[in-house]
Image 1 (tube, rainbow, N blue to C red):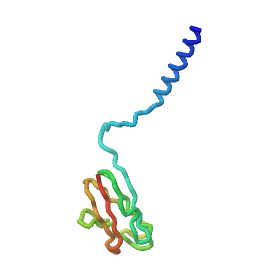
Image 2 (tube, rainbow, N blue to C red):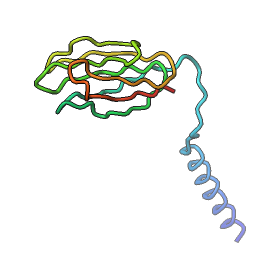
Image 3 (cartoon, rainbow, N blue to C red):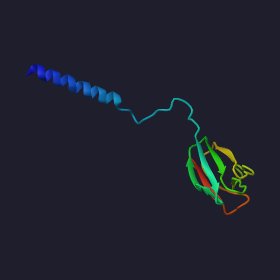
Image 4 (cartoon, rainbow, N blue to C red):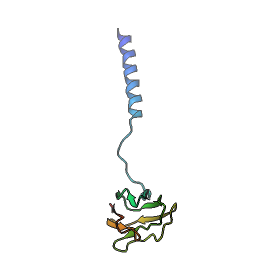
Length: 118
């Protein structure tokens, strides 16, 4: 009976060890500057999609014009202006400051959106 108990203990201990090695911590500690990320906003059907987006600081937004006409992405307060983005083209804007930024298309004032940078 003693040998059976020892064998059983070794098996349980081994299983516990394998289980603990396989578990990963969900916490992370930053070791350097954050990696910039990229998000995409599409311009199609005379609308921005998504029309509302929340991103982290240092995020780059790619504005893809999937429409048959030119568009712009223009900040309501002059923070950025992509200028003309012809049909089938794209431009990028990087957001380095926190805030809520409303924007529009210069050619189509009803095309509006908002980006929140946290």
